[in-house]
Image (cartoon, rainbow, N blue to C red; front, top):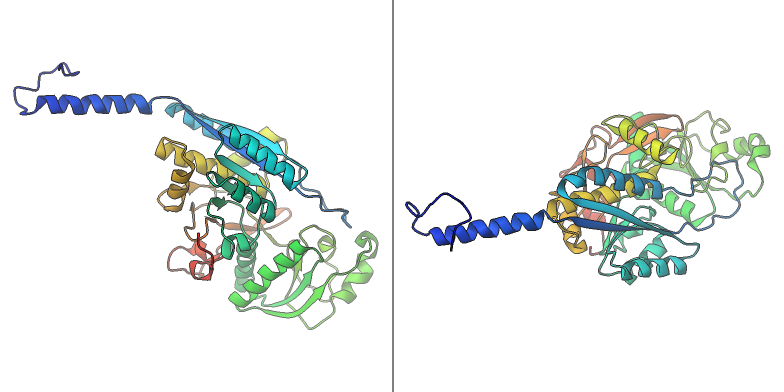
Length: 398
C-alpha cells in the first residue's frame, strides 16, 4: 500500500502501514465533514381567537414568532455557509388544533424532525405525543405546568414561563420594598394562571397580598375607568397594584386611576417579559435593527423565543455536525453548549424541565426599567435559576 503522504516514514517508524491507514481514515473523515448539510426546521402556529376585547389594546402581530424564526434562519445561514450548512424553514399556520396537527404530520412525512411551535399548551401536548421522534421548541406557551408537573420529554422551552416572569417582577419589587400588593385578576383562564404565578412569587419572596379582587365588569372601560377604578381599588393600603389581564380587557385603565397613588405592575404597567424593543445592550440593538429591517416592526417576546429556538438548533448542529433530534436535545441539556441571546449572560437549558435559563427584562411601555435576576438573589448553581421552577420544585420526570 502506498502512503498518501509523499514523505517516506518507514525509515524511522516501525509500523508505517498502520500510520498510512490512520491518515487515510482521517482524510476520509475530513471529506465526510466537508459534505453539505441541510438543516430543515418546521414552524407550526395556532393562535386561538381570544374573542372581543373591551379596550383599545394594540393586538399582537399576526406573524409574531414567525418573523423571529425567519431572522434566525438568515443569521444561521450567514455563519453556516463556512461549514457548508444550509438552513431552511417550512412554516404552517392553522385555525384549529386539529388542522395544525395535520400540518405537522405532513411536515413530518416530508422528513422534518425539528420544530418551532407557537401554540397553546394543550396543542403543544398533542404535537409532542404525535411526533415522539422529533424535537419541539415551545415558543408560544408560558404555561407553568409544562415546566413543573407535566413535562414533555421532547420539548424545550424558549418562551419564559409565567413563574419566571412573576419571579422577575417580585425580585424587583423586593428591592424597591413594595411588599404590600393589591391583586386584580381577570376572568380568563390565562388571567387565573398569571395570578397563580404572582401568588407563588409573593410567597416565595415574602410579599403580602393585602387584598385580591376579581374583575367582573363587562362594560367599556374607555368610558367608565374614571368612575369604576378608584372605587374598585379602595381597600387596605397597598404599595403596588398587581394586574393579571393577559388579554388586555381592563389593565391599561388601572394606572393613574387607583384609590391610592401607587404604581401598577404585572400584565400592564411595569411588565416582565422575555423581550422588548427597549432592550439594547450586549449587542441587542443590532439584533433589533436586523429584525426591523426584515419584519418592518419591533421584535416581541414570541419573535425572540422563536429566534432563540432556531439559533439553539444551529449551535447544536455546528457542534455535532448532524441533525439527529435526540442528539441535539441531549447536547442542549448538557449545559456544555452556552448560547448567546444578547442578554448579557450565556444561556442554557435546565436539565430538569427543558426551560431556557435567561435574564428577564422588566419594562414600562417606552423604557427598560431593570433586568432580573436582581443583585443579591443568590443561587448555589446560577442566579438565573432564582427565576422560575428550580429542580426541587419540579415533580415531573423530564
